[in-house]
Every structure is written in structure tokens, then in C-alpha cells.
Length: 296
Ligand SMILES: NC(=O)c1ccc[n+]([C@@H]2O[C@H](COP(=O)([O-])OP(=O)(O)OC[C@H]3O[C@@H](n4cnc5c(N)ncnc54)[C@H](OP(=O)(O)O)[C@@H]3O)[C@@H](O)[C@H]2O)c1
Image (cartoon, rainbow, N blue to C red; front, side, top):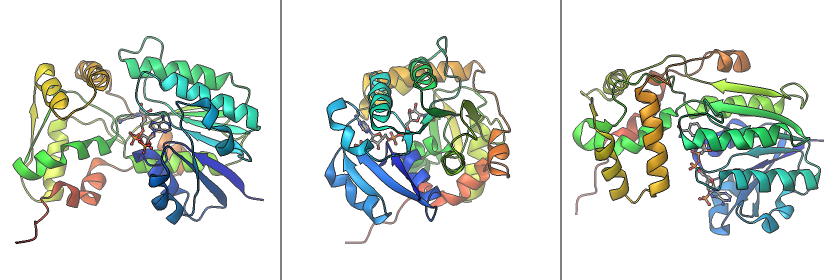
């Protein structure tokens, strides 16, 4: 009998890639969404959709009923540990067997950023929840570069407050494939494991610009900017202050060399190396290219 996997964060970047990675596998997918209006695309993917909110513990039991495996992704924000707690408790009450949790690279009680410290709280809770568990700690997503696509397509430049940071950035598709591997393997196989997932190389943003330029066939330039300048831009786009503060903490840590690491964990799990930035750039070239507006 196939297992039912409950997907949280189902409309977001990682979980969307995970559902794609699980396409055709012998599992029943169930997606948790906050709003019924987000359900159509997920149903088209063959998922059963249940409405619930990680903010609201009382809304969760119907989504967890009959589930064997929980893919637990908590959105960034100060309430992330509460979201994890609500999901883990609902899982325990429903008799879920295994939780596979998305954490973050360097999660620790003394991490130099609030996201790493909050994830550490939820990692500890997950390790002690009494279910089988696996924790994935991915590095900086290559897909974060899509936030710069507007500037890149319009001006051939992108501005980050990351100085000359080197980062072992990873393609989200590799995170998703590792998560799928864990979920499709026997629940005992990865129980108690914490996997730090990175791309194949640690890159500076000048190197990222070169790779993007190569894929796009035009010159792309990285413009390092100050924390204050980036803060002003992000706040101007309406990014919440808590997230802006969190991103600044990461930027400072990365600029000081904190993100300069790679592991061979993805290759160990998948049996082939993770995607390079050149792969990401080639596969996403259209997103970095100005769309032609229809003439009026
Ligand atoms: N970006 C990076 O470089 C990086 C690196 C390592 C780890 N991470 C971790 O990755 C996670 C974010 O993953 P992502 O980028 O895939 O997320 P995302 O694209 O921002 O999507 C967040 C998802 O969470 C859902 N959500 C938000 N609030 C919710 C609530 N109260 N109850 C239920 N669902 C809720 C959203 O649903 P709606 O459609 O309803 O909004 C959406 O599906 C974070 O934990 C972050 O720390 C990020």
C-alpha cells in the first residue's frame, strides 16, 4: 500500500520542486494550503488538498489524518518554531511515522543569524519528537537569484550587500531530489540523520555574474552595495522589516566567509553531483531575459 506524504509549504519554492521530484512515485500526495484558492494547481499535480494554517493548531488535524510521512517546511518568520511545534504535535496525535524537515545551513543556537537560531530550536524539537526524523540543512538557494531577474534583464547588473562572499549555493531542484530520495527510502534508512546540502562549488557573485552572462549571451555585472542601500531597496519593495533584518544578518555572515563551504552529501544521496550554477543559469535563462510586450 502506498504511503501518504503531507506536503507543507506546498505553494512555495522548495515544496513545488519536491512535488515535481515525487511525480510518478508510488506515494499519495496531500498538500496543506492556507487558502482554497491556491488548490487548483496542486490538484492538477495529483495532490489531495486540505486547507489548514500552521498558525492555527486547531486547523491541522484533518490534514494529518492517515498520513505516514510529513514533509515539514516552515516559512521564514518569528513564528517558525511555533509552526514547527504545531505540525509536530499534529503529527504525533495522528500517528505519523516520519518527519523530514527542511532546516537551513549552519542552524545552531549560536548561529550569526536569527533564521539559523530559530531553525535550531525546531531541529531540536524534531529530534526529540518520538517519530522517525531526518533534517535537511540546505545552503543558499541559487533560485534566490531570481529575485534579481528584473534588474538583470533591464540593466545587466544586480546589486547585493554580499561583498566578495563565497557561497556553496545549491539549486533547489537538488534539495527537492534529496528530500524525495529520503521520503521514498525505507523510514529507518535516514532516521536520525542531519544532511547539510550544498552545490558543487563555492562561488563569489562576480563568478555568478560571469556564469549568468555566459548563459544569457550578454555581459552581467555584480554591484556590491552597502547594507543600508540594500535595506532601503528591500523596504521600498515592501519586504517586512523582520525579513530585511534577517537577510542583513545573513549578508554580514556570508561577507565574513561563513558560507564558504561545500559538502558531498547531495552526490552521496543521489548518486550524481549536484547541479552547477551554469546548469541553473542555462535552465532559467528565460527568466533573466526581458519579455517582449505585445505591441498596442
Ligand atoms: N532562501 C534560501 O536561500 C534558504 C536556504 C536554506 C533554507 N531556507 C529555508 O527555506 C524555507 C522557505 O522555503 P521556500 O523558499 O520554499 O518558501 P516560500 O517559497 O517562501 O513558501 C513558503 C510556503 O509556506 C506557506 N506558508 C506561509 N505561512 C504559512 C502558514 N501560516 N501555514 C501554512 N503554510 C504557510 C506558503 O503558503 P501561501 O501560499 O499560503 O503563502 C508557501 O507555500 C525557510 O524555512 C528558510 O529558512 C531558505
